[in-house]
Length: 299
Image (cartoon, rainbow, N blue to C red):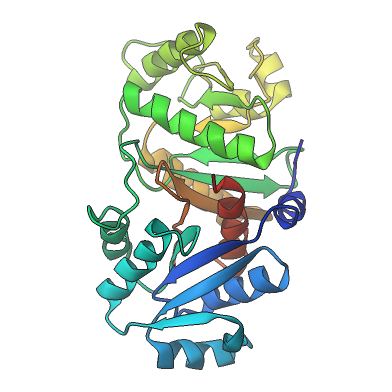
């Protein structure tokens, strides 16, 4: 089982080289990520945006632009739409957000004519590697769906499981996170967790094991689960952490990012092709790891 981003990068190198279409590519960390992805044999890229600015920024990060196709489109909204169109028409495999606000970028992803809609729920999957655990941790959804319903949580799990399978985890263990590990009718997240577990037992959610509700300590730590007499296949061994809402997900993502020595990457899935939707505050390494994840997730 793959347990690190180093192993993810090696796995990507064994696959066909994918092409990333970068929306508004005149962004320093994005071009650094593209530079390293190209040098490592992870992916090629088509750079869409203001050509003059792309060349200027590329020079700062020592990116040889002669290795890449540049589509000159100074208008930000048009550049985002063009980047998405390159994917929907098969000229690229992945679309990546560059120096464009998220709302404009997502409008292009959802565009009725050239967008990447599939009819499925879109959700974000973030993956963390930390020294504290001997496995990768998948967090979902930390960036897109705000207050998912039970039906939406099923789809969010399915999306995350597809990513876990692409990474190489055959039967990921899914923990629906709550404040407590028992069912409480006054805490809706625990009711959803119990229903998701029963649906998993009955084969309504496939390719994984779902069990819960779990508080975070019992999902991550076998010792904590043992102390609280919490048992089950997922107890202390969760691979996928299902967030009850976006506040919980956002706080957990940023806590891991800023208070631990960790590596992470994330992608938006449920689309016709993977979408690299990173924050402007994310490092270029995070953006590069996200490209690697997207390359594995291409169908």
